[in-house]
Image (cartoon, rainbow, N blue to C red):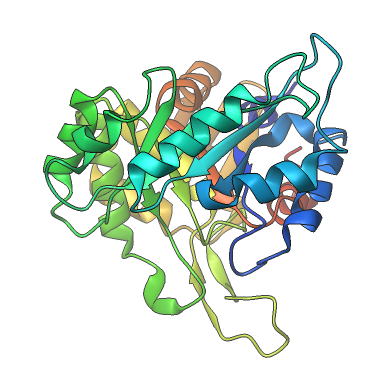
Length: 300
């Protein structure tokens, strides 16, 4: 496996239920099953499902989930809403009915995602779920996120940043994204990203899949994850922002020994440790789009 393919392993959490794709549950389940058995399954992470739709998911996935003892269960990352306690019960009940030997098929919710808006949100939410769950707390990259990130660190949880949406206003400033990543690094908090990361390299793209969709400048997932790797290695935030805003594919040099951007070098170890311990994944309503763009540039 080449260095970039290893760097991208399990990087995409498939979120086809969400905009701009907004696919029905049946289509999302069918797609995920196809991706799991396809040639790029090594790049596929968890399936993202709201807690309020777990029953709907179970019904749609009944004929797709593995049942043979020893099979790997489908892994879900579940979005928890404002009814944290009720959603936590739904998650625990779902897991209990999809254990090995269950007629419902094998699946496990082992990752949960929720908002943290003010002090105390993280500790209150964490109290409802066992420590075996990886908890991601979405924090607004508004410049005042440091106290919440420190609270996430105290709970040994992870952070989450929203990097776009279906309107231009949904995209945070590059400097805010870099500040968020740097603060996570200082607090030793891993993170994931979501939204607006369908594309490999930053550029101007349509915001939705509609024929007359407006366009905006969108972050590239390679820019974002390389920025995280370089920040982890000690890059100054000003340079990391320039990397995040890089729009030339030719500025990136990727070999079997690692990668570089305009003279800054990452070893394979730098890349692997970033993905294992820091920049964990990103949620995307498309799996094929980010994968196909990497293949078009002959990175995988």
